[in-house]
Amino acid sequence: MTIQSAAVLIGLKKLAKNTGENIAYLYNSTCFCLVSDTSKTCNYARVKNEIESIVSALVSDGYLMYPDPDSQAIFCLTQKSMHFCQSTLYNWLGFVTPVASIVAAIFSILAYFK
Image 1 (cartoon, rainbow, N blue to C red):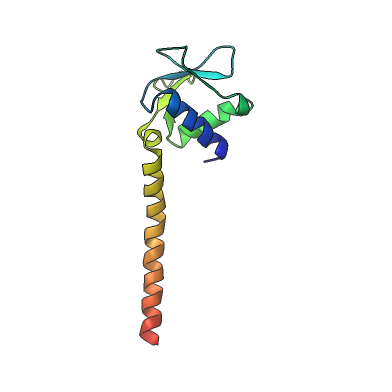
Image 2: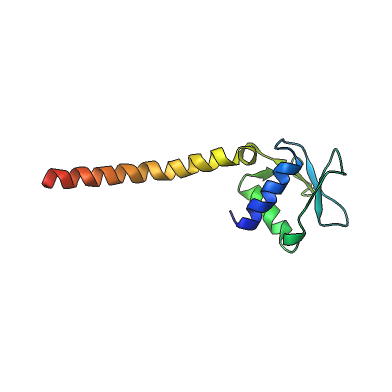
């Protein structure tokens, strides 16, 4: 995930109060808004030239989803994005555990031949 994607995701999490509430592009602006309350917004002006690709990447990575597959104007957070730190930790542990096992096996073999 890029820094820009992480910044957008953090803003969306704050906007939706880390719930599965529907979020939409606010017409004629550089903001997202809640579908249920358009007065609550999140500005994405810093990445306005790449916002569509960022949202698309967040959807393909499983952090956002389109409630209506026919419309890409409305999306919401997924469990993966609501528990971002937890899923990142599990991914990291999934990588570290096999590496630690390999290192332990190498040390065992070296100790055996010593």
